[in-house]
Image (cartoon, rainbow, N blue to C red; front, side, top):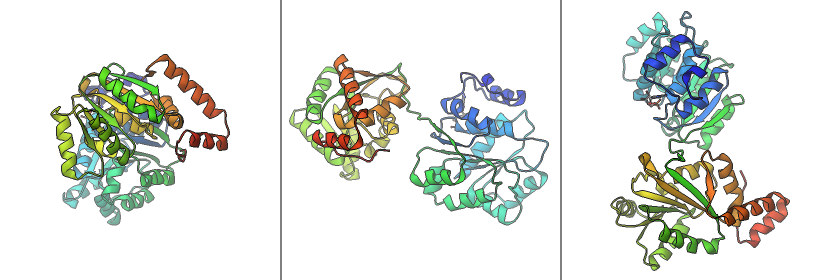
Length: 404
Ligand code: AMP
C-alpha cells in the first residue's frame, strides 16, 4: 500500500494519521494494517523504530467503539517507558475519535489508574505485572477486550514475563483478535503464537531490508575449494571501503582469517571463541579502517554498524533468509553505496534458492555462467528423490542439514 487512503480507515482515524505527520505507510504498516483490519491474527517480526505502534494502532482504533466505555483493546508492553510511549502514540493517532487510552504500569499510584479505569477507558496499554495487579483487584476487566496486542514479545521473554502474558491472555475472550510483534522469533515465542493464535498472518520486516538503489547484490556458484580464490579476486577488484566476510562457523572464520593473513591481506576476525577484549579490538580495527577485511560469524556481527563497510561477502550461504538480510544490511548503511556477494556451493543451492525466493531486491549472477550453473544445480536438486540427493551432497563433500 502506498498511501493510508487505500485502507478503509474512518475519516477520524485518517485525520489523526495525517495530523501525526504520516504521509506514506512504513513497510510494517503496509503489511500488517490490511490483515488486522480484516480481523486476522498477525505475528510480525519487526524491530523497535519500524513504525509498528501505528501498524497495530491504526486497526486497533478502527476496531474500538468509543461510545462503549468498556475496555475493548489491550496492548501489553514489557517496560513502563514503552507502555507510556505506545499510549501517547495511540492517543495522538486517535485524537479525533473520542477513544480514551490509559497506560497502566508499576511505579505509578494504583489510585490514579483506578480513577481512570472507573470512569471507563476504551484501550489499556499495560506492563504485565501491573495489568495482573488490576485483574487480581478486579479493577480491570478484560472480558470485552477483543483486540489484544503483545508488543516486543522477545523482550517479554528475556524479562521473564511470558507466564504473566499467558495469564493475561487467559483473561481475554477466546475469540479475541491477537497480534504479536517481536524483533526476533525465538522458539518460545513461536510456541506461544501457535498456542494462542488462529491461522495467523505472518509478516516479516527488517529495518535493514536492502534498497536496490544503494545495494547491489550478486551471487557466484563456487565449490568450497574454489571459494578462497574467488574471494581474493573480488578483494582485488572491489575496493569500496572495508569488506566484511561472513562464515557459518567459528572454526571456519578463524581458518579463513588465517589464510587471508598469510596472503598479506590486512584482516581481523570476530567470533565467539575470542575474548570480549579481542572482539572489541577487532571492531576498533574495522571502525578506524586499520584493516581492509573483517571475517565474522553471524552471532558476533550483531553490533556491526560501521559506515565504511562497502562490501559484504557471504563466504557461506546462511540457512535462514533473515540472516542473509542481516548480513547484507551491514553495508549500504545510511544511504551509502554497497555491494554484497554470495558464494554458493553445490550443497548450499537449496538454502540459496530460499533466499532468492524471499528477496525483494534483485540478487544478480556475477557472470552469465553463474546463472546457468545455478539453474542446472537447482533442476538437479528438485529432480531427484531424497536418498539420491543425500548421496549427491556427500559426493560433493556437503554435510546433510535438516531442511526447514
Ligand atoms: P515505532 O516503531 O512505532 O516506535 O515508530 C517509530 C517512529 O516512526 C515514531 O516516531 C513514529 O511516530 C514514526 N512513524 C511511524 N509511522 C510513520 C509513518 N508512516 N510516517 C512517518 N513517521 C512514522
